[in-house]
Image (cartoon, one colour):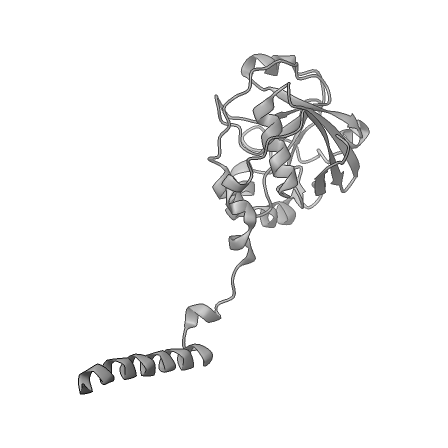
Length: 230
């Protein structure tokens, strides 16, 4: 009988001691501040797989003005769905238009949080067939080969029909604010090895910290939102 009483008493005492240690700061892990970048909802790509409407509009509020993009799902359904999900999830909020090549295109789509970039860099989309040409003002996902689209998109400054044969499938077009797109800061030029502009790998690995410190004049996307009414 004595032994059957002792075990619960010891367990209770241990629980009291553990509670006292935690309350007094004995648990060092509990006292460490949580890095909010590590709790970002965008770290869970599986939560961002919505099906987009047949057509929708996205407003990019940038530091040089607003741009409205009309997306046509029948042009590139997988790309349209991914863009819709990312915009609604806030992926493009507080990001930088980090690659601007005048006379060619303007590219964005690296998140300001490097942990988010790390997760999304392998969330590949199968290529959509190219059904529309990459004309001036058209919007398509960037990619580095077959089936490598993730989060980055570009807006063509000119008619880039040569990109059609390389599998870049436009999913939308700028319908308002092309003059704003033309005003995106492009003085830094392309990144390595073609130029001295922002280094894509570094922008992915360090996020806004790197871009704001080394390239402070980049045009910023303050927010991106899906507009009501299609």
